[in-house]
Each structure stands twice: as C-alpha cells, then as structure tokens.
Image 1 (cartoon, one colour):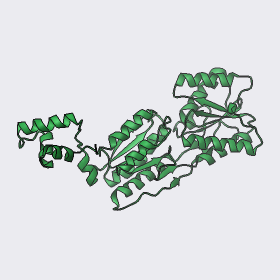
Image 2: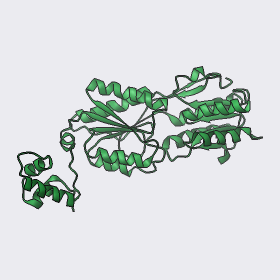
Image 3: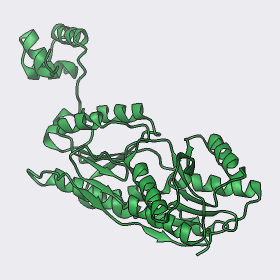
Image 4: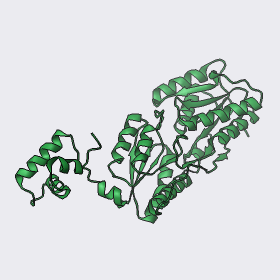
Length: 337
C-alpha cells in the first residue's frame, strides 16, 4: 500500500477528507455512526493521525530540533548556547534531544521528526552510529539537516566542524617537542569521523618525528567510568608506560588525573597530558591542563544560522560543504613547554 494518509481513509469510506479529519478529532459535527466507521478503519489500517502535518507543510512550527549525544560534555552545552543565540534572534524555539550515545535512540528521535514536530534539525551523531541512512531518510521528507562537530561526510549537507586533524597533529608535536618519547592516543571505540581525524593527526606527527606507530599507542576506552579508570590504571602502571597522552575526549582527561593521583605519578614530570576540552575549570586543575579548545559557541551559532537561512529563504538549497572553524592549542602546566 502507498503511504497511508487521511486521503486513504477518505477514499476507502467514500467520505470527504474534511469529514475524516473531523471524525478523528471527535468533532460534534460528525455523527457517532460515521465516527465509529472512521475509527474502525483507522485501527484496521494502523493509521496514526499526524498532528504536525500542517505545520510541516507550511513551515510554521518555528522549532529547531537539536540532537546531541550528551550535555555533561562542556562542548555541547556551549554549542547549545550558540544555537539558541541565533534561534532567539530569529524567533525560533529549540528542542534538545539526547541520544545518550545510543544509535537506537538517535534513529527513534529522527523518525519522530518525520511527523513535522520540527522545521529543521541540527545533529551531532552518537558514537554508535555507523551509517547515515536514517538521516538521509529524514532529509527525503523535506526536513533540512545540518551537522555540527560529529558528522557523516556521505550526506549532502553542510557540516560545521573544527580542524581536528591539524589540532591532533599540533598537540602531538607539542608533546614530542616537550620531551615525550612514548606518546599515546586516548580515545573511545567508535566509527566517528572526528575520532579518526584526530587519530590520523596523531599518527602523522609520530611519522614526521620518526617514531614508530602501532595499535599499542592507542588506549581505547568506553562510556563506563570504572572500566576507563581500570584501563588507564593498568596502562600507566606498566613498566613501559606512556610519558605523554593526547586525550581525544574531554571526560577522559579527568580520569587520567585521578589515576595519576592514585599511582603517585606527577604531571608533567612523569606524564604530560594534552586534551581536547572546553572545560572552564581546565585552568584550575592541578596542574592546569593543556587543552585544544574548540570554538563550540561559534560552531553552534554558525550551524544554526545556516539552518535558519535554509528555512526562511524561499528555494534556498543547502550546499554540500564543510565549514571549518579552527580550534586553539592553549598550553598550560600539564606539559613542559
């Protein structure tokens, strides 16, 4: 059967679309007998009324859906501030949806958007996401989608990111120039392009400095705090332990500090640390953390501005392009130089 709509019910029952609509809304204008017929057929065909269809067609919900993995990460909280600065200026509401790093949650949220709940979507995909079919499906329903931070390059839309490869490369070079002989890359197990870009930057720096790279140079972590603590504890207690860490995920840097404290390892004497992080408290850690600070606010603001332009400008086609806003390496006392 073709896509089930209110017109399908009208055709089957030989009634007008208006009558079907009123019957589904339990209008007093429609007889009880007709309502029963309409509801019985709707139940038989598993028809679910779409309360947002009108707003979707007319672009009048004035709502933007923002899909992110988590809010404990300071990058995303700052990105949301950037998004809301544009939304508020243009008269849009912002609905925040958390996937909690679950692909099933992400698919369910985007499926719900097909109803017309939002006019457009800003998304940073979760670490479990391996393909973009659910995103392309939503876009096929004429719902514009813009990526920020975590992206899929095979989707034809704007991706607002930072220079992850260059940042990881520069941070690794900084560790090596600060005396590290055995730097390691701390990451999460993921198919995300953003993690791969950072890893490739790390590997390039090692290669240029004639340092061998192997899988042993990667410390793979998960979403579980205790598991990550144990993994890092074991690695930093080993005889041939790292003397430098490039941490690709903000939350893991705090665990590194805790492990070092418990093992009696001095930072930066025994271990130098650089982390991708937007933590406001990075400068208050002991010692202050050297960070790759991402322009989170600007990334969110830029992505929102492009989406609003697509929603408000008639016949506007979203380009397939990457907008790169550079990050900044802020050197503090967790590294020697």
